Amino acid sequence: MLCERCNKNPATVHVTKVLNDRKTEVHLCEQCAKYSEVVPAFDPSFSINHFLANLIDSVQDSPLKVDYIQATKCDRCGMTYGKFKQLGRLGCSDCYQAFREKLELLIKRIQGVDTHIGKVPKRAEYSLRIKNEIKSMKAQLNEAIQKEEFEKAALLRDRIKELENRFNA
Image (tube, rainbow, N blue to C red; front, side):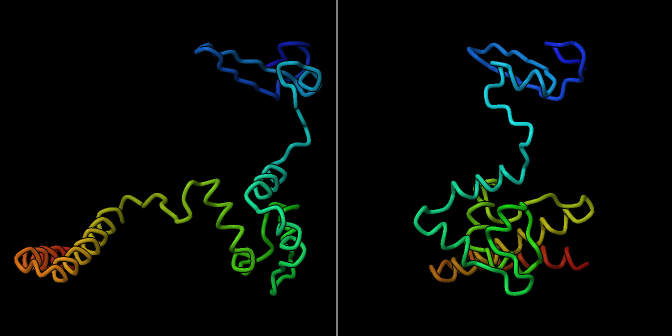
């Protein structure tokens, strides 16, 4: 696709604008995007590393930010938190623990949650669902015992045994 303005260079900047339920799309080359009013803050040097670094900064508390960036360092590889911000990637597996406090905030902000809830392979889906159901029912069983609801507890116990037998068979 060619640039809509100069019709010479390939369009590498694509802007979609929705205003009053009306969608407009503009496709420009880098040179035309720099001078376009449609793309006011176009920066061709933009990278995901800079984006994540700015996102990290926005999560942190201002007074502690400088101290944390300078003082926090991975014991294994020597990477500082400032270097991580600059590169956008960690140096080793121990960096996750060294920068855990800030990484948890960042991951939660980006992903919406801080625990993995990814996909399950089709062949493992059934067994995982059964395991989770058993785990949930055991929690319900303990709660029923605590409340002295023994009839409900007996039903849950029987259902758990049935699921475990079917799962182990």
